[in-house]
Length: 345
Image 1 (cartoon, rainbow, N blue to C red):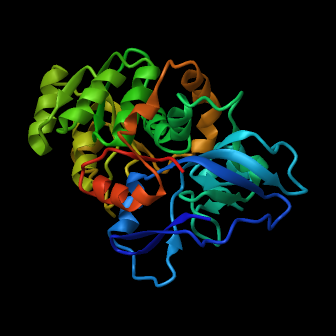
Image 2 (cartoon, rainbow, N blue to C red):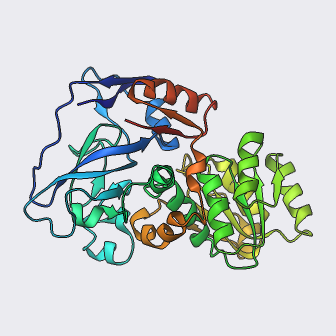
């Protein structure tokens, strides 16, 4: 079958002779991929991977149809349309029961630990009953992109909002206008935030942010951005700040624009080792929560609004490619020519 392989820095290739997935354990399923995509976090290995002659599978977001199930699978059926969260988990261990499937004692990540990557024609899914979430009804072409966002980007934005305790009537700042930041805008709006200030400078992205619910856009960065947000909020700052970038400066901005007693929800993959929490933020009782999003815990909650069109997170995809276009899709996202690339096998 065809699948995406990463052979090193900026070296993405499509191979058409990757072995077809097979049931290995009785809790496995094989899923034929209907939609996949490139994630912003895929750009980290894209920019840093060591050379590999054989290449490694990549991709962790996919939506597909169940083709085969193992003898121990009870709730996942052949023919179901399913979405796979960006990690696989048994959904029965103590961490999973707490809604923290990303810490599953028996789980793991796609494309590692001898598992398939999501950017292929088919995927072997460990712990199918615990990992896969069925999508009701027949596949609706118009909904597939938004359904796919449930695998990662929309729950990640939601996790930022939940971590920062966004409530009805709040004023919220979202730091970052990438796909996660825009999803965080959508999530904050869905949770009832009255005012949402989006910090970003790419007009095409911030325009989508306004469509998703942003009421204000701040294009400045650093101290100028902090001053602007403070000005917009009468000097107090926001009730909640959602950090969706992962750099120290973005986190510092989020902390500084948060009002006394407020929370920062951080979901940007951390590219720092130290958190800028000094005496000033200590005296203001600003807190930080968040981390990697347990997407599996949120999918059932978010799904109804996706199905009825109340939210349309699939609008974050601004380019669609087949497998042959995947290498250029990586380049386009890395060069900021594309926001998020949808892969249609």
